[in-house]
Amino acid sequence: MNRPGHNVAAGFSLIEVMVAILILGIALAGLTTGITTALGSSKESELQTTAALLAAGQVETLRVEGGLVDGETTGVGGAAFALYRWKQTLSGTGIDGLHEVVVAVESAADGRTIYELKTMLFEPPADSPTDTKTAKPKKKRSAAR
Image 1 (cartoon, rainbow, N blue to C red):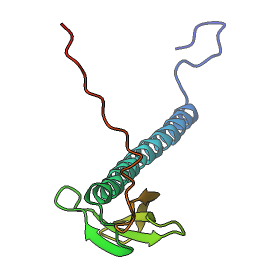
Image 2: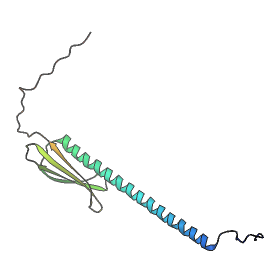
Image 3: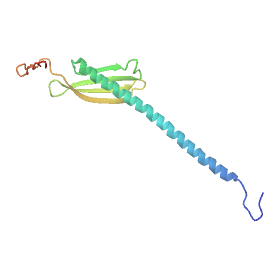
């Protein structure tokens, strides 16, 4: 109903409603794409972090066990890391006892490299003499009364 003196129709026209729905649809599509990208990035971050921990664990295992031998070794991540397999390469350097270690962690499903860790480990050669003459004897502590 129009009031006298007013020539404005009350409510929304069909065009205005269509434009509002179009804007809402574009906003929802953008929001959905953003959420999907965030979830994918989160999963990739989890894979990278787990692969980094697996690679660091392999290096620490080498450090603890000792007996470094140049060559390549492969393995799988085990029950906790079933999605991963690893390949470690030890190679000598120009310095006796110093080894370059490269641990590459790959996806068990498609074989793509997820993470690669490079470091150096030093292990004195077995035939190196140990100098006991320069070693300082430990001082005994006296008990304070």
